Image (cartoon, rainbow, N blue to C red):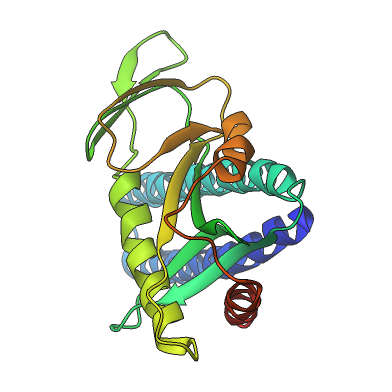
Length: 239
């Protein structure tokens, strides 16, 4: 199951990589034709060639950085998938896609359904020092030469809450019963090297090893019936 997560994720990313590669190749051919057609001086040729090589190096560097980010993200998701698959009497789903009213796609890393609730889990595999005060996030990292710099963490708590709203709306629009289902969103950090400084978070923020205990010990206002859990599982399995 966990290998399928990475396979699906990288299949989507490889499509994007293919488009980038084709685009880069087309640009290179156009610039090469320009050099051959219009430049006659040796100096002009060297200058244009240097500009072309620099542009290709810059694009390739961005491509490699993105590929590394995708790889780390997939590794974090697989780690959480292995933990969640240990749960008994729960239905577990991985790598779910959902679209909003504008056709914008969102990816939900994991969904867990049991009698004590529906849990939507967002996985982050960031390194460095992660600081949070309510919905304000900051990532501090150290470069290879020991120079500190700010990483790009965006806003994972707002991301997971937005996906929760989308999932809740989808379920309530699909279910046969007009029941208001509460979705418990959870943010999980999987990288053991990450240092978490969390203050007043607006969503639960956990380490990977804390997740299963959080789910098992969660006490809802009311438990789902067997019929409700089966219906919810059927809805998610068709997404």
